[in-house]
Image 1: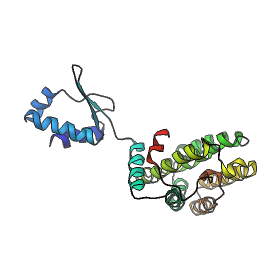
Image 2: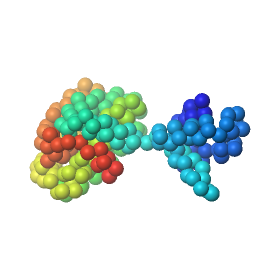
Image 3: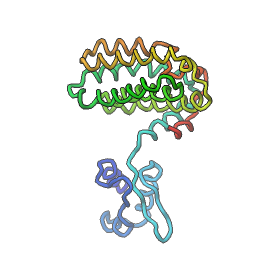
Amino acid sequence: MVAEALRDRILSGALEDGSMLPKQDELLAEFGVSLPPIREALRILETEGLVTVQRGNVGGAVVHRPQPYKAAYMLGLVLQSRGAKLGDVLRGLIAFEPACVAACAARADRADTVLPRLRATLDQAAAAVEDGDRYTGLARQFHIDLVESCGNEAMIQVVGALEALWTAHVNQLARRNAELGSFAEPTARRTSVDEHEEMYRAIELGDVAKAEQLAKEHYSHPQDPGWGDSLAAGRPINALYIRDV
């Protein structure tokens, strides 16, 4: 009961991220229970990552609202435990991201909520087309922007977790080791810029069907730099990479 009540306050924002839970004496008075249930409630919340209990003279419990990277990290752990490969993550993105692109195009408020963000990333990418490593990061950012701008929170979090996993591996295995695959070729980077621009224009016009079709065609290119194609599909997933994102 105590854990549920405190959890609801954290998730609703009534208890802000980084704030302190009420002291144990206050919790005892509020809930009318003994100390062991209060301690068990804090243990439950700490296990869930919603609080960090600080012990000692300046003890207390610091509130942590759930963060998206934690969902991606947990997904990575589950996939790693099941022996999943990077190809599984990539195929998931290829299947789900076009739906996010279509959702971006369908947004009535896209001129304010979608287009400025995409435009900023596209302009940076176009300016960095001669720099393979920088362009790789910006191409990945464009994909992330599309997902995070789709307006559907469930899609943002679920597809975003796959995005975070893939981006983490691109950063760790491709960019860090300077193994950029087709990203090493300026021609491939320029093609990528052009295709991103086409998707942008379809979204700008609100052409849902065309935006989705362009995304499917773009994401089906195994050589597209945005996928960091130097990563072998058979590589195992390493959830720890998510910490570098």
